[in-house]
Amino acid sequence: MSDRYIDFANSDLGRRLVGAVGLPSPARLERWEAGRLRPIEGALLLGGGPLAKTIEAFAKRLTDELYSFASPELEANEWVAGLGPKLKAVVFDASELDDIDQLKQLREFFQPLLRSLAPSAHIVILGRAPEQLDDPLARVAQRALEGFSRSLAKELRAGGTLQLLYVNEAAEDQLEGALRFFLSPKSAFISGQVLRLEACGTAVQDWSRPLAGRKALVTGAARGIGAAIAETLARDGAEVILLDVPPAKADLEALAARLGGRSLALDICAADAPAQLLEGLPDGIDIVVHNAGITRDKTLANMTPEFWDSVLAVNLKAPQLLTQALFDSGALHDNARIVLLASISGIAGNRGQANYAASKAGLIGLAQAWAPKLAERGASINAVAPGFIETRMTAAIPFALREAGRRMSSLGQGGLPQDVAEAVAWLVQPGSGAVNGQVLRVCGQAVMGA
Image 1 (tube, rainbow, N blue to C red):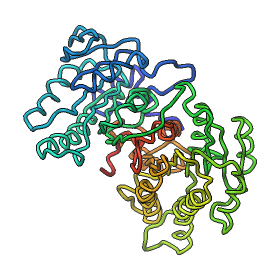
Image 2 (image 1 turned 90 degrees about the horizontal axis):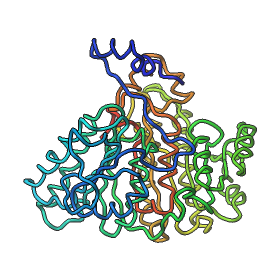
Image 3 (image 1 turned 135 degrees about the vertical axis):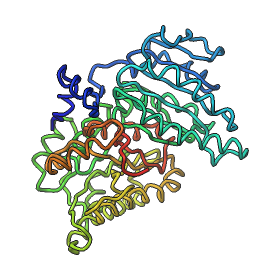
Image 4 (image 1 turned 30 degrees about the vertical axis):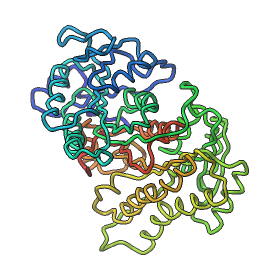
């Protein structure tokens, strides 16, 4: 659905009027397009500690324009504030900041460049997970990065985004995959997020088709976000198996045919659903995306047992039972990747959605509970929590609520199904086993939640 306010705010007349009355002016976000060759089309700036040197070794695979700032140990040309090119991407290694006084390096590095960011610029700050450090002062300094990064993300303009990645020393070889995602338009609607990268024994072999040779199951795939996920996984080389309810069989088969995949019409709440699923996956599976979900909104005072039971059954119980069946049977391959579609409603709650929020919070718990067990087999499980995404469901929301949902984020707009799909596609890559048991919000840094 078109966001007419963004269209107006970015027109010649709209820019003048919006600026004159002080209304928000959300930018049109740059998103990944077919045929693009490099993650970054523009200047990449590196600075900070030794991880910047690690990144410099592969940075030419990310961009043709590489610069350094206040980092004499780097070989890249020095960027000069006010004279250098506009910056499309920035990485600052804060992993060696180990006391409070050193935090001033954040201001000294970022302040000179903030007015030189290109539209839809992407910033990543690197650190070390505080809970893994022995020095109390270092733990304090590294924890401070979260407040700084989330605050700076809210100050960025023109579609800029910022993430904080805590990098385990054993995970440094997975930095390229993370930066290919977070410094590119694939992460257009993600900002203010904090993730931890741990050791991972697998890596992407071909960045043009990172999922080549992998079989992927997507539930709720007939339309909307599920269809976008299926399309994106197929684009990245996966063989897709699309699952949805029998009434959606026609749409499901048409999409599967277009993507060169298979369709599986199945009610995931049926008593024999696990057995039917295993029968439909005789060769096992490498990737599972639990996207199927429903809403039955009512305030708790008016909530019927049917509304409560159906939402919990589809959204939470079915993913648990199907995952258990795949794991116990051995159909879930070693080094598999599982993604659960949660929601920021499951993080912050939402009036009239006690059943839905409970189910989505439960999915986050499911990811956290299963992560250690799956890690023993090189597998991972994570949750993706979308915010306001432009779908047929949100198009049916009353106008005032829809506009509020769109504007209540740092990016000032709703996301697209593609934004959720790109996040899922990154999390199911071989090297993304470095992320396990975590939640990635795709919400434009929404006001709701942490």
